Length: 128
Image (spheres, helix red, strand yellow):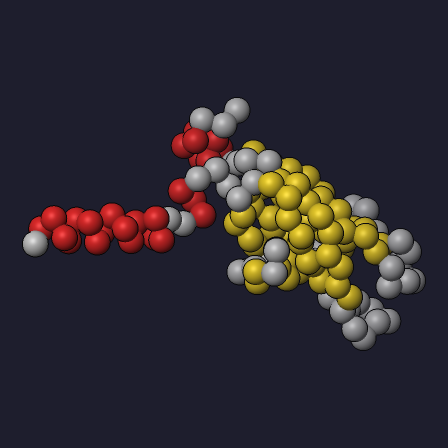
């Protein structure tokens, strides 16, 4: 009986593995205001067709399709959305934003404002 229970538990363990059980990357919103008036805060909508949680997505390293929304701003009534490719590295946090082509237009491009190493991840998995 104990042997059956042990086998059952071992077979369930891989299904319980979470995103922090292997090297990971984080894609999230940059909360720091920029002196550049063309950089705007966005909403991280989804990554690889998986909805993000609280403007943040934890993903495995590698190529991803990131969809972000630029909320409506003064003079515009609709949010706009774009999807872009991002190749993430292990144990790195990516801060995304929108760069306006002009403050008077709805045109913009997604940008990664900066990348930060995730110290806890690097230490846990020996990533340099």
